[in-house]
Length: 304
Length: 304
Image (cartoon, rainbow over all chains, first blue to last red; front, side, top):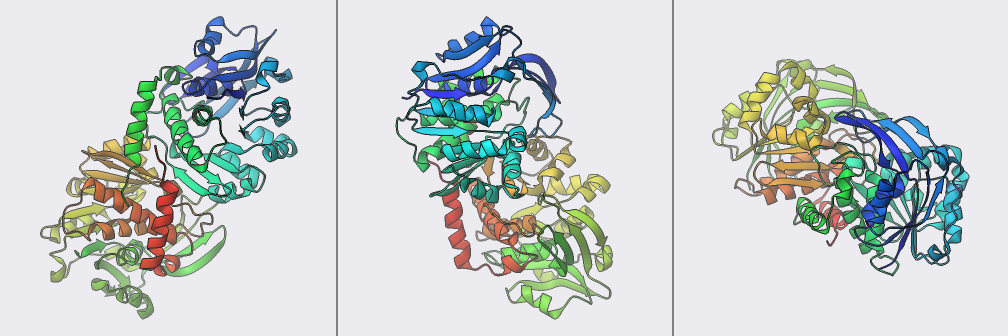
């Protein structure tokens, strides 16, 4: 089993959805990723928090044996995101982004992280993604995410990172924005020509598409959830499950491994949306995950 | 192998999509349904056309051994629908609906149709759907579709039909409208409480959800198509493939039969969207269908 390195945001989120609201709940891509991935593999985090970041919140990852040597505490406030969802829970509307200490984030990896084999660059400035990747000596498998803000403001840097990773995990809307292509399948084809050997397009409640340069397509519907409370972090949970599954092997993943990783990632993401913030995903155990995997498998089963 | 009875529209469509346009091309739910279903089973059509309906267009179904005894020709113009799609190909925008001879459509079944075992009530006035159903002596399996117009204008009649069919096939947006429920899974649960033993929610490029009162859920992504030319008729093609598959058996379908029917229906619908109108689905052969089924199966395959 290999250590996964993740770099991303550690944040407080204020979220409103049609069924309720929370104020400054723990969030950020690196938190969702780490909680999910740590169910399957050891995780190392690179990120920055402010002096307001509570000991209790720090312990959430520590208690899951997540390595926090790469977490810097800076004077000031932790990154804060505020947003809401209307009935279309597939898309968040941002109300406010307070970067705070995240504005000057300069990821320097602890010596002990340089040998990381699996690396996930969550949605941060592509310049910083490159910087992190440059500090890892010989990664086996690297992936990245991104968002509309970087596509619009730092596209050329983003395209450089895309040349250096094996896989891109990206939301459907952003895959279309980055490729200027209205069809998701066509967008995934274009993205493969930009560098990575595989692309996962995340379609929220509709599931994912995996496209692999040599092996082609895999399509997977989401685990059906009748009451979605808060979709925040579902994509990062997916990424955590995805990398958590892959890094159980030391080797470069096969297409079959990637498909299984999509299945595990989707299964974990379905827990995240069942409550606000990290509440539901934190409560997942090996048993509840395994049980849902069995149900999920049944939902997909058809003899043809 | 059983005869399927379908009642629905026989129409001329004028369609504009981001890649092109066609004027008064053959369409209507009963045409899409019959072309698809006739690949698998014999079909009987109940519908009305105007005196402008060409012999050539009539021959499209006749050449596929579709029984047209139930097709009435009336003096006047055939039903004409005109609409367009923007980049969101999942939803048609209607420009104009000329009911023409369809306005006074009064479906009287030929004697020979009374023994039909599989019946599909495509999207027409629920009062007429009921009238058709009342003329079939002892159907084995009946299904229906509907649309926003009937949900808004004839909901109580629609609810009566729902009490009498075994399965409802409905678009995602309309499933939410009918149940006042923003979540598709929750909507499918509510629809089951309105009568049918099963519901298929059609999600366009995202695939379908099947929910069965006793057996639960099945989720199936659509066959991925990188270039969608015209999505018109995809849902009716799905229904045709679905019923075409089921009626190969004389017996009431099992949950497994319904899942396979979703698979075949989705596979056929993926052909329809690859060209305007009926062009692409008409060209499908047993061989091209079988080949795509194999590919589709591969795209779905994951060992878990």
